[in-house]
Length: 304
Length: 246
Image (tube, rainbow over all chains, first blue to last red; front, side, top):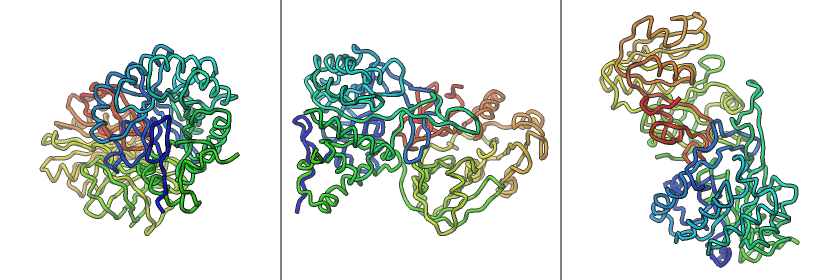
């Protein structure tokens, strides 16, 4: 039997729900030599801001039990370079709509970048990152209050024609309240979760491992938290959810979808195994067969 | 270009109490230059461990690593016959085309290993190779004999003076008035900086940084250079002296 792995995000049909998450896949360039990245549902490109950014001082990476901390701090070449260089190059090796991850330090910057990227043909969805834990006065501060998240959503929706997904932070008391505020402000969908704020200490040096002291914790250790938040948000909202957080197998993808996700992002797993997303795409029909699933779309939010 | 493959441990032995040598058998065709590194997946550890390649041939890779944490400690407990999952061919490596007739190679501590294959290559290309091996104390010393056996002139320095020249690698350059036209170095950051400051000659410096992926995707190991932002894992670990910003 042919298993139907396709899903639809705001009218955009994806061959499968597997989407490498922003910040773990660059612009696809580092992975295209390992495998044909066109087998993916899509991918979310590196978080882009108006100006080029170096990001935080190093060390920016710390090992954790079943996960890692990063404090990259939105290093990116800036929106002009992304439009002039990265996207034309991307078109030569990726032939599907891509997800544009946009970040900012002010409402105006979010709106400016989204308006620019909205004109790019290959962009299928705009993912607005209001949840980066690694930059001060920006990123996450917009994603930790329902009012600020709604304000960003309205500003972006006013200048774009493409579906807008807001990427939410788990570092909040009530993620459902923020999700609902985004939905009411006109978001077409949501992506959750971004990383959890974490910290490691080098006990020999008596100093934080990360130069920036804290960073975003990701990896399989956060999967149960992500499933829980996807479940809560999907139940409370009627717009589609991209689930993200600790996914490393086809079984995890299906679990996330049963919790309510329409598509599933794969993050840290890509960094330890460059073939991680490919393996998940290939395992998916086998896992569907094992679980007696004919159409993947049928299981979205099936858990009551 | 890099590749993911499985390798079999042929040998894993201590050179000093904390520095070990592991010889792996498998596909080495993706390693193209001295100074490149491999990224090793270890059972129970999330991130891979980047370790520089000390030497390689058609079938084997030699890694020399220091036990500095849980990952390298785990590696030291592995035995011949066990398998490891590696990404190989990572990093730019040293460029020997810029070498002059008389090259100086300076290694500090566990920065010494990648210079071994480099020395081999430079000698094969007809260069004269002087090697300075810098350590804190005599008990940390390794590979003096191996470099001599290749045909290098070898100078040892120790900070406490228990072996060779007392002081730093730069002390030896000054005291022995070492004459060279180009240098290559790998070691702790203060040593790289000291060498950069003490030399008029051009050279190449191999840097170390905590990495996420090792193949350029995560931007975890970025640094600023005179030619823009670079990733230590793919644009480095070797930087040209002319581009380094401290």
